[in-house]
Image (cartoon, rainbow, N blue to C red):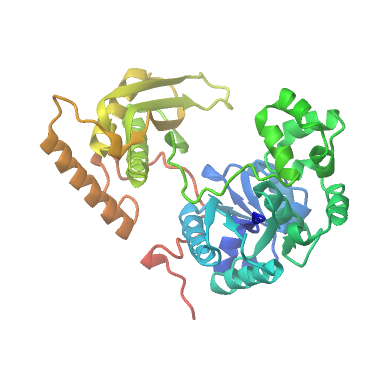
Length: 425
């Protein structure tokens, strides 16, 4: 007799805001937003801000009236803090189920196939994360990953189950049908706003409507992914748990500048900085790159002369060497740079990635040089991992970084820097 597969989806509520509240109790109960790079747009909202009608992606400068009326706190994004808090959450969850798939920075799937009394286990997960780290989570259980994600939404909104936990596998078909008839189709995993509009035009407005729709018609119109979603909503598991995160096929490093850049030297500093970050990520996933793309652009939202250009520079052999990648980036920048423009953004993308273990040696390469560079890059990575990013960096990446993005309201790196540890008095 085959076992019934059961997945859990654990999601941290309002993750970025919740991370900030762990270290500053004065933010609890207050309307709080976390802003994107250069403090431009809202990327995370507390429940108090959502209740005010503030939408995700809303420009910060357009919220001044609401800020004054309701005392909204705007914080610069602190991705170092969020990444470390995520690592702590996922480490705890890895010990609470036999298998885990980290889906994003604030959510993961767990295999609960052989674990009974799931409501009790879900509450145990919530208590442990809250007690050990201080973050609130919700847990949803379902026979497929799509159903588990939907159950998590129901747990957050308290549409079914206990506070913070919803187990669809323990509900009767009649109860599930009544629940699905009340949940908007936009809450289905993979159904975005544009797709929802098209589904509503077909008369599909709820989860129940999508589940009961003709899968063949939806496949013909929207593709096989939609058909798979319908099958998942019907309880047929089409998406297995991925215990290992697959390596990225491209690695991008890019930021908008805090202030516009006009000189080649400052653009060079920016792309070398991004090249170093991308190369470190490349080595972390044990991959090599065969080509590097460099791009620059002006601010398309300003009434100024516009310029945007990109170029792909092939490498002489696949590599993860920061110095080799940096030289390719500079060569690309020299080819596309034009004097007289006010640049707002630059970036580097590593392309044509391959596993490092599959690299084939070429006839004319300097094996000893490659080995020395590998040891150098390994030493740089170890030092930066221990003492902080950019402890050791390329000289050409500069020090002052006048172009660096604005983050005027960034909180300290509470968990990753000795000099920024919170002090208890």
